[in-house]
Image (cartoon, rainbow, N blue to C red; front, side):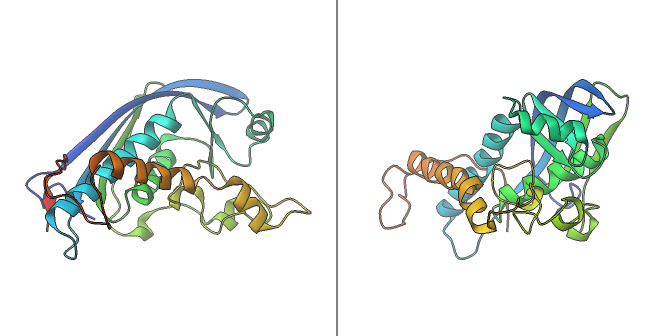
Amino acid sequence: MFSEESVTSYMTLECDFHGNRIIGRSLVPVTWNLTISLIGVEDSKLSTNENQTQITIAYQRLNFWLDSILDNVIVADRNDPVAEQLFVCQLDNVIMHVPSEPTDDILCQILHAKMSALAGSSLIIGKITLKANDTRSSYMFYPVEESDYELPEASDYVEGESVYDLPWWHRNDMDVHDISIPEGVTKEELIEELSTAYIVDEFNKEMMATICPGLEDNKLEDDSTTWTPTVVK
């Protein structure tokens, strides 16, 4: 992890998204403002151009997830019966599962974990701040160690056996929920049917083709131009 005091330059990614949270039996409309501090990391085994490309793809991957998932999201306790009914109804809205009442302090941690999983090794996610218009408080989360997350394992918040060993906020995919394995279906069958990791893989390929249209034999063209945040070696 990095601290903003330890580097001379870092980037801030900001987005607003609209959605609802389920509190009791109420569907509360909310507009959130999310601010994320991040910085690029160089791999000594890659060239400068290759590092810049990987950082750019990671940055765009975060934007892709934020734009695809968060707008009109419904945030709910995974074990709330109302949330379960909405999930079964297959609404057009994305249903985001959280392991407790969907307050901003837990949502802030979950979004930090998910951003870190999506960023991979090319970007470090530093402090994130979350402010909702239905409260006067804003929340900041900045873990120094992974153990600073106060989040459960999948087995601790999903009734029965979860399809995945990791909860959705630690997976590099498009998911924002976890489900248990029903009777008569194997874990492998469900993963094959439900996995969204391929969407991230396809996005990475499309970004690589866009940034480096002359890519051959996994080597980047010397004249390719990419944007990148300041890199710390």
